[in-house]
Length: 237
Ligand code: BTN
Image (tube, rainbow, N blue to C red; front, side, top):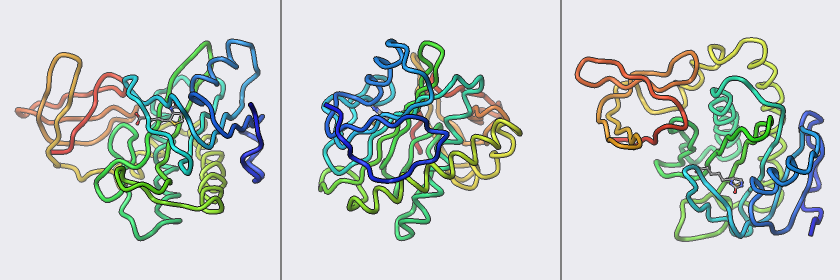
């Protein structure tokens, strides 16, 4: 059942907002709405999820107190858009919660003090782009989390969407190169040892940067190998 769960005025670029107190998954609901020809853009937001999904179809733990939403927009013909979403989110979290050390782990995981605290699931579906975000803002001893009350959660949402509005325009005009330095500043240091998990292999090397189109560059045996978002996952050495 749709219930009103947020009392803030989000920027117009988001389109219609559908709020739920509980849902299986905001990502799945967004796909259902698209299949029913619901016009984009729109936002699905929930206070909790019973079947939250992460990348590689992993489960996403989604108790009450966390932030869960899927922003659904027209398609964007550049996968680096998801890296830009990560930049916007880290920048906002850093300003609201300065006592934690937030960084991006390529492509767009968010770590606080070296452990994952938020994730982004960007998917193309039926000519729409779905950007699903989960942030651990619940009270819980088991998962890395930044416990927040409802006001702080709303502040995160409002500031994040305002920044995203601005960044989406910049991305339209200038592409990922405009964001490259910001990404490098917010991620692991160049030269850090990393492991890349591809479907059939694991490759160890050194982080050597990000390309103009958002691919990760790994230096291994004096060769530079580029990896696309979606194919692989990364472990910091
Ligand atoms: C990841 O890091 O694996 C991505 C996690 C994305 C989780 C969010 S929570 C809101 C939206 N609904 C889902 O079922 N998944 C995404």
